[in-house]
Length: 117
Image (cartoon, rainbow, N blue to C red; front, top):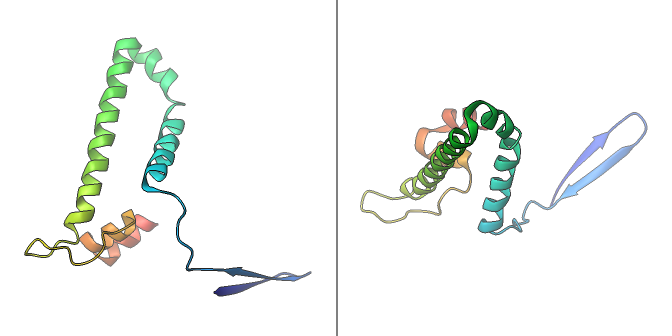
């Protein structure tokens, strides 16, 4: 258990946190939540796209963006497993669990700091 103390002029509060807690989401629910965030933010631009491009152009633009997003996600997922393979094709450790960790393994500490910031 790790604890930190926050002080102010009027009171002192101690906040404890258990750093051994594991995530409670499954991979599927995390992927769905991420997709909802991306689609939710992107939906604000849809009326403008359809106004400028029309129904056919807007639909084609959405399909192209969906294809690019799918290809990018597949590439990142494949890179997770390529980053841990040794020269003989065996896995040497668990795959990275974050994009920052993947960047650190593939490009080094300095690149991961840029991604994190």
